[in-house]
Image (tube, rainbow, N blue to C red):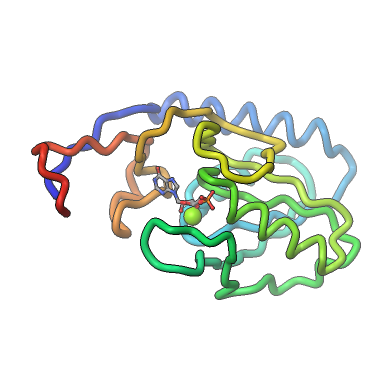
Length: 180
Ligand code: IMP
Ligand code: MG
């Protein structure tokens, strides 16, 4: 598939938004100790920028999850490829994610962490595509709501590429023929 990438959210806008989100999280959690759990790999760029701006005692951990069932048909069942290392019982957690699409991944991971005894599980996501939601799940902190477009950059990939772009860009298919 031939495609180009058009800037949707510039580096400057992302930097500004990350600072705003960090300030809000800091204000809402004064005096608390938080564990930030990034979902690999998409959250890595966002999470590393975000945590540097929050002046609270933060510990970080990562999970790796993948949807069961190949291709575009998501079943809602998520396979845990890497679990958290920390004991999360009675802890206050933040799941950090690049984007909420159907919401299936975050709903599953949130319930999984609550089942392990976490006291609270907050969600912070850089992007949200509300039109695509299939299950009822809300992110407590959202950077940008975007339309139903496929985006890459700032952690997000297309076939594992473009995660290192410093902006979020829309994938635009060049020739009408979409047969990969
Ligand atoms: P959900 O379970 O449908 O909410 O899936 C969210 C996951 O789908 C994200 O963590 C991304 O890995 C992936 N995803 C959804 N939309 C996009 C996109 O526009 N670009 C890149 N990855 C996406
Ligand atoms: Mg992801």
